[in-house]
Image 1 (cartoon, rainbow, N blue to C red):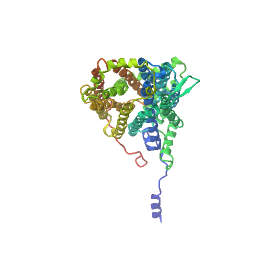
Image 2 (cartoon, rainbow, N blue to C red):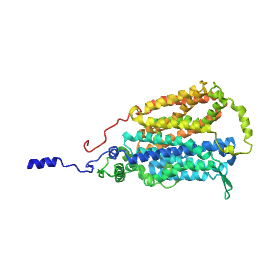
Image 3 (cartoon, rainbow, N blue to C red):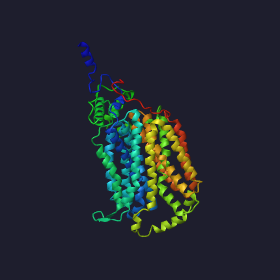
Image 4 (cartoon, rainbow, N blue to C red):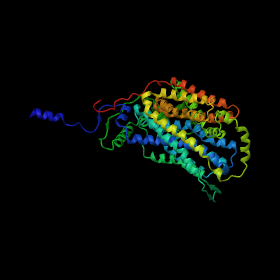
Length: 537
């Protein structure tokens, strides 16, 4: 009888709840939440926010040609309007990075999303160049806050094993959003309806509605994140351990659909970073006044430019500058150059030979600008959308592939392959005289944007939590500066020295490929580890 009772005791199941009677690390705690609804939701929202950045910055390139008559813009003013959103991003990146690292990720992301939509909506009612320029500047100013901070926010809801993969998943969603841009522009802008708004004395045309549509992703994501908690890693580093545990328990409940018992975590082990942020937390909470805010911002930024972070900051900033120089700078002239190649209709011609026909035609364009605007001037040629669609499709597929292989092969091989392939394509464009091949080389050149998310993933691994968002913001600020430099470089050199334009673009990307070898710890790959469980403890 005693033996039977002992056997019965042996088969009594363990309690359903997972109870850690000792402290565990935050990474292990995040592993316990499992990968489910919360993670997928965050990835989709993050990717949509990244797509919103594209709509706010590059979507204007579809508007400028058709809004010329309504806003009475000169050629110089078109250039200003095309770059002003990037200027807003550059100016504000530092501020948002500081606020995200001291006040909170969500406290930056949600308000800036709503403010971005507000600016986009109001800009659709602009009646002159200066008004829309100011509003587009502030749209870029605010979207910068959510676009850079979202990387840290998403990464901190995942353990180290899944962090890079989650960011690349968001990049895939971003690629899908990019794919929709030319389709949305085509179906919205290429319409013939219009109506007059007497109160403001303006005609509301499809391009104005397109600006509102470009702002909609920001509004939707802002609403989606309203009930989401702050990053568990951030609140933990702020000393709020109980709040971090509550967030982890909340994630576990949603990811398991409530089918598993509540996680019972006694405590999370303090990390060195947590001790380092205590003084900053107290100082940030007591900050009052503009001068004090600037001083605190400097104290938050200065470590990035001192040892042991100086070399890391310099490398990621140079890489982002080089990527954006081509991916955005050369993109601004993509439809124009491709259309010029198509217009030549020659069996043999290089990109620059096609561009050299520009000077004589520019005079004609300047003359036609004084002619009255007709209905056709409110539309874009279908070829612009077709080439843009192909490029965005390449981005969507590329991000999907990178997301699948990044943990297996590591970040370095991806960076080197993309940088070198794109750089060589840019240089070959100077010499290849087969039009169809030239266009494909141009498409490959512009896919260097794949590296933006990979470098961001590497940046998150390089810096501690209290500096992470600031590091991403600073690096992306340098990247957006590369966009402005690239666009102006192409505009300056395209007519006078076309070949040099592609040489600079290609050589800079190859140089970035070489520089990738010097990213600290870039050789390490993320090894798939077994999920933390009761038995393994």
